[in-house]
Length: 461
Image (cartoon, helix red, strand yellow):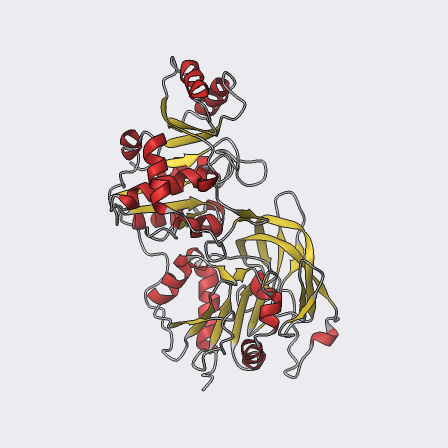
C-alpha cells in the first residue's frame, strides 16, 4: 500500500522529500503517481515538472470524501508505484479541526504515514514529539520517520540512540543542502513555470540514494488494487460541437486543476489553449473562456501592453461567456497596482482597481444570492481563497448597468471558519468573476449550471 508523507508542521521538508523520491524513481525508469493533499497548485506543479505523471490534488473539503477516494484509486492503479504528499501539519485541517487534514485523508484511504521532522536543534525532544503524533490517534498508522536538517554524524548517532527502543523505523537523515532547497515566494513555492532554477533530477536522485533507506521506503510506494466507482456525472449530458472553451494558460495564468480539463474533455467539450502572455487574441471559435488564477501582478506591465489580448477580451464580453478566478478576475478590472506602486491598465470590463493587501487564505462556504452563471439562489457549495490582493470598486450598483441593461451583482455570499457571510464576486448571465477557486469536476451542481449556460450561449460565428 502507498504511504502519505506528513510532518508536525509546514516547512518541515515534505515537498523536498517527495521530490527526492520522485527523482530517484525517475532515474531508475520508474513511473510514480503522486498526489497532494489540499487545494495547493504550486506543490502540485513541482511534482508534475520532473517527468513523472501529473500530480493530483486530494481535498476533502473542496471535493468531498467520495471524489477524493475515487480520484486516488482511479489514478494510482495506473502505475506500479504511488504516494501522497500531505499539507501543513498532520492534523491541521479546517479551522481548529482535523477535518480535511492529512490525517483525515490517510484514514479515508487507509494508508500508512511516513513523518518527516525538522531535527534542527533537537535530540531527546524528538522522542516525545514522535510518540505524541504516533499515539494521538490509534486509527492512524505511522510506519516510519525521516529526520531533516541533520548535519553531522554525531547528531545522527544521538538521534538513533534516542529511538533505539521505540517500535518505529528510521528511514533516513537529510542534511541541509542549498541544491535541494525549493525557492519560495509569498504564496508558497515558486512555480516551475516561473523559476529560473529547474529541479536537477540527477542530483536529487543521487542525494536520495545517499541519505534515505530506499529499500524500506520502496515498500511504502506499492500502488493499491483496483476499486470500481460509479461516475459522478450523468453520461447523457450533451454539448453542442460549436461550444469550445478557450482556457488562458501560460506563465501568468496556471492555477487550474488537471482534473478540470480532463472532465470537460470527457463531456465532449472542445478545449483551446489561449495565451495572454503571448498577446494572442481569443480564438474566434470560442463561445466561452476560462481565466484561472495566477500572477498577473508580476506581469502587470506585460499584460497592459498585450493589446491584442485585452482588445479581444473587451470584444468577447459582448457575446461570449467569461469565467474568471482570482488573478484571472484581476485583469477584468480597470487596473493593477504592482508591488512598486505603478498602475497598469487592464481590460476595464469590471469597475474596480486591484492593489496589494494582506493575505486572505482558507476554505470558504458559499451560498448563492441569485441565479447566475455558476450558482443558483440558496445553492450551497464550497471553494478556496488564497491571495494578497484586494479590489476597490469605484462605481455604484446603478452605474454598473451597461448597454444590455443587465446589472452586474455579487453571485454569492461567502464565509470562512468562524466568520459571517459577506457578498463577494461579480456576475451576470454571461460573466462570473471572483476571488474563489472552485473544483468543477467534483461538484455536479456547478458543472450543470455552467454547462447549461454553455448550451444556451449563441454561436459566436
